Image (cartoon, rainbow, N blue to C red; front, side):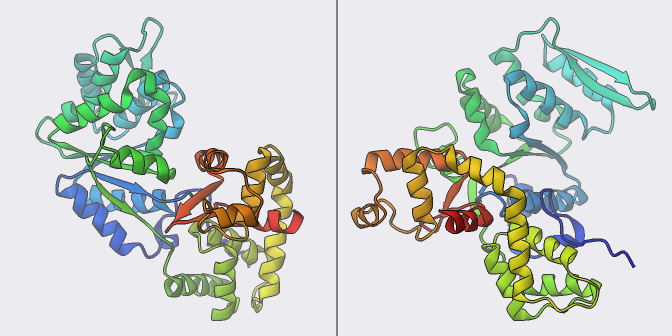
Amino acid sequence: MNIANPFTYGIAVKNKNFFDRTNECQRIIDTLSSGNNLVLYAPRRFGKTSLVMRAIEELENKGFVCIYFDMMRAFSVETFVDFYSKAIAAKQSSLQNFFRIFSETVKSIRPVLSTNELGIPEFSIDFTRSVIDVNNLVEILELPQKIANGKKKILVFFDEFQEIEKFEKFNFEKILRSVVQQQTNVNYLFLGSKTHILKNMFGNKNRAFYESASQMTIGYLPEDETITFLQNNFAKKEICLSEKTAKYLIDKAAKIPHYIQLLAAELWNLLNIGAIAECKHIDDCVLRIIEMKSDFYLELFINQSNSKKKLLLAITKDGKNIFSENYRNTYNLPNSSTLQTSVKGLLDNGIIDKKEDVYFICDPFFKIFLTSNF
């Protein structure tokens, strides 16, 4: 009997694989539906996108038009204009009407409405004679309000929002803020994983988005609910997972949702129907994951500067008070200025993060790799 693996990772978790986060989901719904903007930040792999997708599902059931766009996709201002326009078009009931609104709003960019091989209408942009400028950006960003036209309520979700910093030469942040504050039928949720950048963006009085949105974060999943989720899913294969073993799995995955799903998926593949899961099985799965990624982990480490290498190894032992003199002396770290540069570099690259004033290595299996090899 072939039973599908119920544990998913690397994609937004939906339906039965999404659990808990009820209060967080309701806060998103309440904030946006009441006409306010929201910024959501948390370290990578904590389940932000899955949470937002669940909120979008419920908001759409309430009649909202929800436009989701991942800023990571935009590597240039042209790709932002292209992909964001298509994200908006994808949520329209009539592409012909959107084509008309786009043509009237965005003056110097030629939209194209065509049909694919299946006869389905498709929207695209012809950049052949277009050079994107600030005016074009403003016009593109005004599209949701034009579509709303006082009749629809539109919500825009910008994922990995901190990536707008790569468009700094266009003053993108200030332009977007100016557009957002003038829109009356559109609200926004800004989410991202580089928490230090987002906190500065929305908490620094010198930044355009200062105090322009309510702020929220998400933490670790509740242990009891996570244990129940794991036990119920392993029961589908008649695998016995004790509370103790489930806790061991959660701890090995550093309580991070993505890595819990990844480790559970490996354990599912390892065990036969009717097996009893033990801690040694989880250790075997951890070793398998590290073995699969060992070349990547090694390259990731050796490509760091010496000060970053020392800091990474120090954080595997203790992530508290890393700027104190005692910490620097204990782990033979450089002076405060160099250390701050190293911390910023590792944060920007998503290798470490900070939660509740404690720095940690984002990938718990990379941490185990480091402690085992250096």
